Image (cartoon, rainbow, N blue to C red; front, side, top):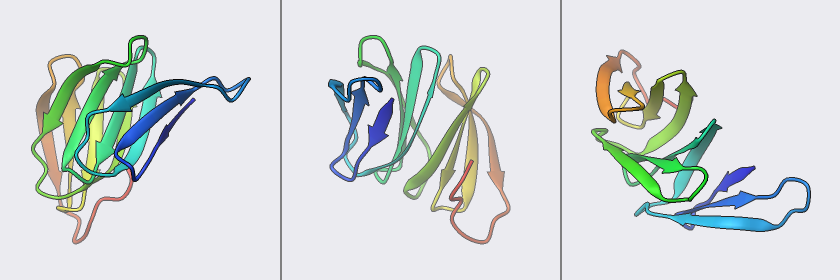
Length: 114
């Protein structure tokens, strides 16, 4: 279980006991969204970035940058990460190489879910 906060952190919890296991720090703005799949935790922040974390260690694996606005949403699907931003775009990232694969532009406002 992982939660994201306006205090710029994520916390990994033991869902059975409610004990805090790890605190993840690395964003320079509030964390708006988080997704956990397999060995990766992925967070989206007002600092315009997405961070991929190693779920086992809590260490930052990569930082995905390229949005021009706050990142409001994030999803993980297979080897892809999708982030939605206040800049009106969604970006499809390669989860392994941390490179953008496609920029999806077409919304007239912020992309709030991906």
